[in-house]
Length: 199
Image (cartoon, rainbow, N blue to C red):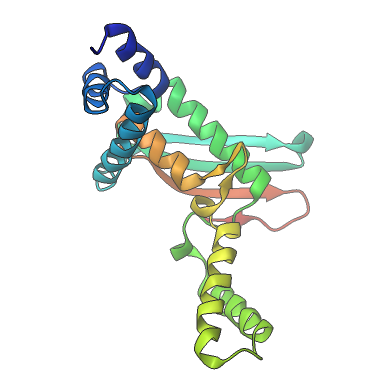
């Protein structure tokens, strides 16, 4: 028997709609943990469907760190002004700005990494494994390149507040929660005495 109290518990844990919660509980015979997993899986599917929609609203935000010695300016887009004004969206934007200040990515996605930097990293990786058999060198180089992307690409970095999640995981969860496509468009990091890293 799926009770209203059980549905409410799942809703509070996941922020999913009442009917979605009820359906997930029915599918899992009232198992709260399994229902939460089912909703999360569905949320990821929902987020993927929303990824193609136009995100033309949103916010430009700033974060000043280290007593004014460092700052981040970023643009995050969503589909509507309604979502852009919600506390959940604004808190998400603040978390992204804070993460950028702490982790200092150079771009949002791996496609945006300058070709010269990729070539340089490949050369370094090849030099490190030059004594290995040629047939495995490229696999090792690709692995090292993936590791490099996870340090310099915002969406591939581990979230500073929860290292078990990547920034892409965080973004996907927020898309599912808010029901709109969200795009981290660009950012600039300013540090006193340093040239800025802009995307």
